[in-house]
Length: 119
Image (cartoon, rainbow, N blue to C red; front, side, top):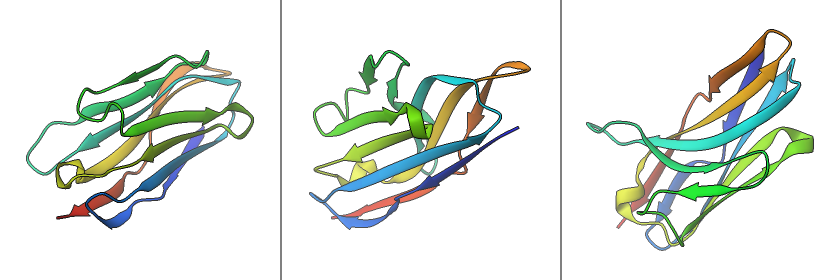
């Protein structure tokens, strides 16, 4: 079983910064893809950023140049540095990890962390 713990959300003014973290623990052989998603009220969950085991990254057009995803494989942790935040970035942010366990490959979601950007 794998457990994910997210942290770093909060309330910030427009133009500010936040850093999200998502740490995984449990019976982990390795973690392949790591990603951050967000869901605003009344909207579908959308991919914000993703990073592969090899370090290749992908960003939503709306956050490119402002957000940076990174990972620490030794700590089984993925980060999302969010700069120049805008009110439209307000959402619940979820991490998603593709974990290789003894039983095979499984995807896990974090519990979600609220990010609120005031204008």
